Image (cartoon, rainbow, N blue to C red; front, top):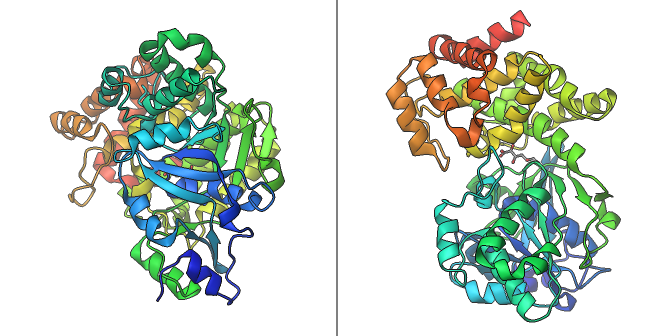
Length: 490
Ligand code: CS2
């Protein structure tokens, strides 16, 4: 099969959905840091939908860690296939909004110069939770983080997202240019405020002389939602069959998509509202809803599902007891902490259960289980804190936390190794090895990881004993039986 490219698209007449604009007329207005699958399934699609009428908002992406996206997309003119999957089948569409991808490690100067270009008015980010180099429990910049220490020592050779943003903004300041707007699209609570806290602190350390300039930078919050499983070779084969073109890195996703954006763009923005985004004054209620319900349920299902032998989310949610558990977690424990009307939240929950059950998505529990230390605080622990403060029970949330603890021991229920991916994996494993299968000891040791649990949660006897009891049951009876016992007793 021929490789996807601009010239192949020109030759195609078989009804494949292609960009509705001439890419030669598009100029960049956005630099996106962290050009992974999530960005390509979400923001890049919204932008693709508006370029026909707003040609100055093309995207140039940058990878901060690996050059794999650039390597895959460069030979195909940065075009890629978006494959939308459901029980009804797979729909393919070619996305053209990404004009180029830079590899920060090889093209650092070029990237910083580009971010300082007057045409660039938005720098957006999907660098994942750990890309913020912060303490997940407090949200403060981790000044001891190796990348931050490096960037403070070498401000002209930054490797971290905050380091790159500060270097580029400082260059703009020196040229008398207005700052770009920094738009976080990561799954963090108040992601705009988090980005602001990190960048402002880094700037105060690196460029205290530019405090006034940095005070002018806007950091709108956004709530982004679309489920994006990692692409597999089987997916590549399906896409080739459907489009008649080889694509080295197509993106597989679900029909659902949502984007809620705080309308705070002093440097200008494309009319995102014309392509389905909701522009609002305050995103926080939406973020809280999404993190506590979708992501909280996702992480709970990921750990318990993985331990119960479910490779995919659709299998986990198809397991009656597990489904009942996450239904209860959302209804009884998360929803009462959220500021929206109960009816709206109930409808959101039902829609989530349907999305999780999408049989065509092949979303691995292992993928969601990744980076638990970075995810637990905003997905489960904020809800735990609110409920404890109100004197309410946290039985299901505590089981989610205990399942994470069982998972990071690195050995599954059949005695096989689990590939635990987490920036703190080695430290977690060492704590687990020292505690052995003593649930009380293991719970105490892991609750002592302050970046995750802070200092309040380990000191809360009700939470600690709930977690330790669940963990003891996970060791003694396994995940499936522990879930069964909890749902039959509640
Ligand atoms: C998932 C999210 O991998 C994970 O941790 O919970 O990526 C989730 O699929 C997205 O937030 C959905 O919008």
